[in-house]
Image (cartoon, rainbow, N blue to C red; front, side, top):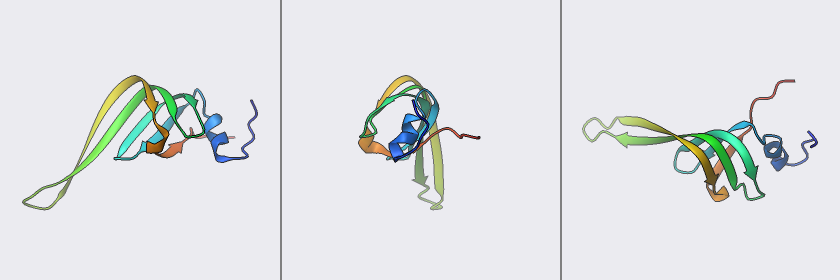
Length: 93
């Protein structure tokens, strides 16, 4: 496997079997180990931590209340059309 980055999906390929961050539509974040992906960014992630952020507005004070909920998932299939961002692990060289 080459470490040459010629196109954007090469960065994802280099992240196979690494822990990555995936931001999804609807204020959902996933952190997990990338097991597989395709050209549509459909992905299979393992050891996933899902974080869902919701923003509610207090009707009396009109203040925004930000709530987050987290859950652990052993294995997850992510459909690529919901993916907004994929962040590979930080590489130092």
